[in-house]
Picture 1 (cartoon, helix red, strand yellow):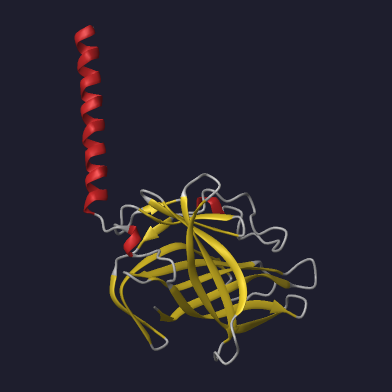
Picture 2: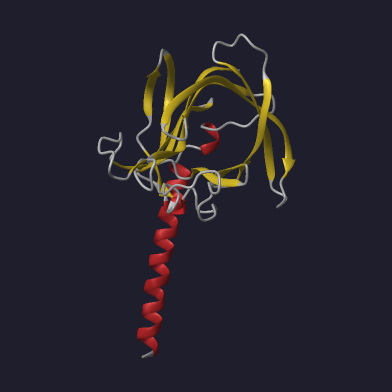
Length: 252
């Protein structure tokens, strides 16, 4: 009995060692996530930003257009003592004719195998090792239940903690609205919908779609984050939610 027990333990230990070795080998073979989200003080990226909102008592959709600039500030220790970077954001009209206006701050924390972003108390794991097609992780695992409440009382964030962020194949080139990007890593976060666009006005509809694209040695070059639902009752029927589409137009 002792010999069998020792043999079983040896098999389990050997299997664990093999799995651990394979996992570490995948990470060593992987590209570094820092290559797709470089963090240097003074670096900036300028985006075109289209913001979807609902007006007229949440019954009419409207797109507001801007330019948004993200500038990396100095490194600092976060509340856990981890080295983080503060990022300032600025906004102006879509044509770029007006001066920049301060629009907010968020924080980026690079860790050994992942990169976290904290914005307005949303803590999200943006990138995770290894960079491998099909690799998944729970990017929203740190979010609270219904994190968009009470601003948006919709059904879209009911299971947001369980979204499976997934790497798509790296694209050698990508073109979007006349802007060209190279070595693009896509993170698909969610793609869930019903009755969207709304064709049956008597039925509930919703869309949850989120994707981000990162260009090697540049950073985030495209983001689309759309969350809305449609409720036919109680009357009047109405939409709740928002949408953001942004793409890089300049960087240093």
